[in-house]
Amino acid sequence: MRDLSRLATPGTPEELLVRRIDFDRLPRHVGVIMDGNGRWATAQGRPRVDGHREGVKAVRATVETCARLGIEVLTLYAFSVENWKRPRYEVWTLMNLLKEYLRREIDSLVENDIRLGVIGRWRDLDPSVVRAIEAALERSRDCRRMTLNVALNYSGRCEIVDACRRIVTDWAAGKRADIDEETIGRYLYTSGQPDLDLLVRTSGELRLSNFLLWQVAYSELWVTPTLWPDFRAKDLFEAIVDYQARDRRYGTVAEEGGEPAQERRPG
Ligand code: IPE
Ligand code: IPE
Ligand code: MG
Image (cartoon, rainbow, N blue to C red; front, side, top):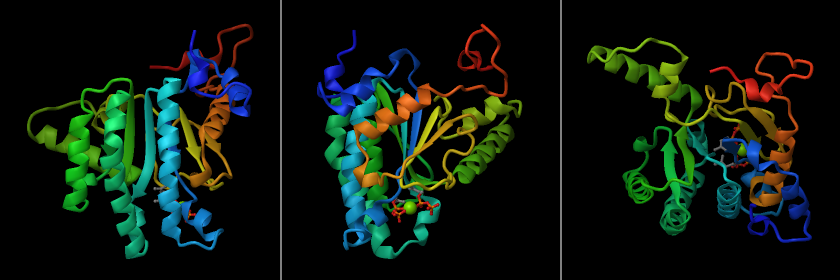
């Protein structure tokens, strides 16, 4: 019997939600477009970067909650290739927050058996950021309970381009593989990880913003008006309860008296 008290305090609205979660049908891979930091700060008459600082608390809460729930992979969209178009000071602050997050949180990630993965063109970032990432990746390399992917200098289109380039390089070196869905999946940054089951976006925006374009093919989408700095365990529980009420048909139709479509995913 799962110890629900680690997920929510008895008697709280969070606990009522946790009780509705079917732990045998959890999404294996959850992705989050963490949006609305700027608006959160602006609404309080504060500079946008204050929203990013506050957003780190939501990251901590979300990582902890996903690990406790038993999610296999959590992917957080932290910085897109398009985000370079932002003011220089905002970009600088985001990079510093990232370094600080890795430095401060890596012990706790390792203690909780959480393996860090970084996806995107992160090797093109400032050398100080690259060093911080490499150190954190190395520290958590053998952790197994959950994988936390941080999407950094990430673009779904660049990911597909990079996969194609690597396939061509391998072909030239004599390592030939059929060009099919399985091969492309294997060359993506998320190689070996399950496709995204549940995509959460905060701040009410109804778009993908170049996030996990391949892996999102049959994800369930869940959008909340809550701004990222205000996002907590309760919001995540709501998303999961809602996800579990969906009929994931994968293009098929429900058979009368048959097994639910969710169980019939091809391949
Ligand atoms: C998300 O919040 C954080 C990043 C994109 C890095 P935003 O900074 O996009 O906040 P809004 O959308 O402007 O409110
Ligand atoms: C998406 O948010 C990128 C991240 C959350 C890192 P944006 O705020 O950059 O997306 P748009 O510009 O609203 O599409
Ligand atoms: Mg935004």
